[in-house]
Length: 273
Length: 297
Image: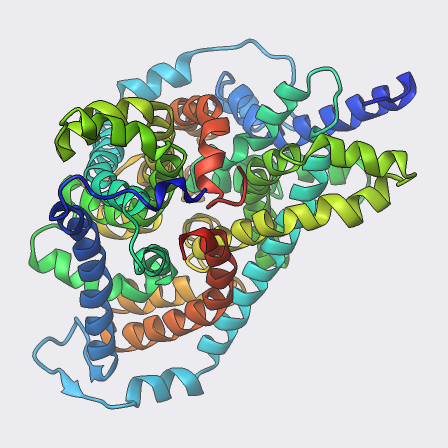
């Protein structure tokens, strides 16, 4: 890339302006979380202020915050494990032993995502009510794992396809059974891909809002529901909302930053190699 | 590419049983609620008057289709999806072109730009609603007031547009996440050759980078469509679909009918309409993605 010093500076300024502009709302929220409730709503906005941790203490002291966080963790980890358990064998079989119907099956799986969640809200709500799954962590795990399953299968499929079949054949020659081949050869080889898939699934489930706002509002409510409860216009607790939100998004943001490069290859459905 | 196709299963019998759990789960997940939705949509069924369920035929559909709300919600849904797609693809491409350049700190910039994608939608919506767009205490209100324009009441004056801004901010990072690596996967020799032939940045973009980006763009559009057609949380925490119906999309309308109005029949009919709409839009995108699998044939 040959560019003169001036265009380089211009690019740097433009690039940083875009980056800081996009990140600004998150940064502003983060800053607000160290303000008192009064400085948080001050006009003109307070840029210099005495930082305080009291919001974090206040949020963590609320017993229900921890319950929400626990539900979020249980739901995102549970759904991800369930989805992986279903998807790994399927992706393995489709990636290494494709049949004439493999392509159709993959596209069909993706097409189930075309079924908008709202289209089936009513029956799922009634089914979950009758099955006693309404407002339970397990009920949410079931829903979330099914709704990430097509994406998980696709991502794993694209990662598995990159493993040369020769390696698996070699293990087969040595007399490995299918389970051994899958567990001891393929999975270790694909650890980066599988962890990227798992992280994306965790991110999607952690941030999932439609089902958690509609199906789990009290006992199994997640952090999405907790933060949504701040939508009440009378409750102008911006500093506390900021602290709670920071705690809610920080782990996922860090996961996302770590895994972004790995994630893209699988997520782009073969469009980015 | 074709190296994997010829492989023989270790012991033939297992391949089908490996696939079965996923297929069965998705089949159930698709068919059961779908059939139930279709069934309910032909009934007069209100949770407030149980036991009075009667067959209604096309009644619910007639109610919905002759009522303004459905058409407004459908229009809003299309506007939301269309505008957000346009915003994310245009800005996603521009930002990717910029971040593809080599300037000090471009790696950090990339991380900052993609960050909003990882923030949960309720939090994003609340940051914008409270801290930025609030007409009294918000940062934007302070800026416009200092400039002498007075505060803008975003959510009562232009509710749909405000939601578009929020959602566009959430999903532009996703476009960058996919398009930037796609851009970087372009063969550098090809770019260099074009440059030696005297192609300026615009010609380079039109004839080399853009064609290379079309497929990833289709993927971005498809995934965004899946999520945007059911956009809910952002509306739920900001405007509640209002004022009036101004920011009600299909998802929010069905939620209102079902869980606030307890009208299962009508909500289901709305659901069927949402499904039909999604499939019309989704069909041609699926084809584009299917092309990435050509080598399986």
